[in-house]
Length: 426
Image (spheres, rainbow, N blue to C red):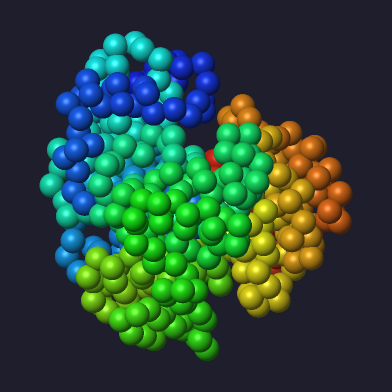
């Protein structure tokens, strides 16, 4: 099978800068100017930053807006199986032809100058959004916020800051206050900001920036509340109460993500039908996703096992995942885990040690920054998990199913591993 033309252009773009991450906006402004400043021609923008929950919150907002007839652009990263997943134009993933043309145009306009892969591809997404009619644009921050390539919108319709926790300390700082300051960099003068649940120290930083810029705050616990209620959830804000089903995305943490999405939708003037759709129609791969079809899933189904996939990768995600597992029917639970060498592996695995029976470690295939499988296994043993390692996903799954045919198997630890699984599961 011949690789898409876009793959070749994306490979060339990787060579335009020696670093994968180099936070500054100078190169982005230069390229956008060469492209005619398309960031000024976007449909109303909802800009989303935070450590956890950005993608799920975006997916719920999109589901709500689309259910009541709005056309919605959406930008997210990283992709799982194909780059095209990052750019959704008026509800549809970008086509190979359109992506190839855009990448070519941006590559030519850049003129061979230094620019990171994320920066130039973000410019391509913005150019696509500016040229395609839609009602809203959902922009998810890649890393941080203040110096992220998406932070080029002078007057978004709304900003959102999801829960902030420790992650990417090498780039954002090693305190909650420092990281929250970077995330709060997306707040704009007099533009309302929806704020999800936060540590007090992080909330102080976010509120301070919002107050200095005159940005109205819609904060969890102050201006809106979301909580479980029997088999559903309750959302309440200053305009009233909604009694809704539980989010279709699994896990109690999705109730708070739903709360942020509902606060955004209500601010935009959406009705209860949009709010219902936000919690019942959202789809977001690799967030406690049950795999039911495909070669890997069929290996599990044949023996009566369950196969789940989750891309969370920091301590807060580990806590959320452990809570979700506790809420599932009792079944022997075995993890297959691969992580990047930039992550707090022990911090991620520690809360999972009490809910999993074993861990099989992998090196993430094709990923230069993978933590070696042996190191992940050792980190698991350090926090009390029975751990071993395997050469690949299929071998790990086969070994678990041979010993425990009706296990619950959870593949987790990285979105890059999740992408490899989705590609292999076809």
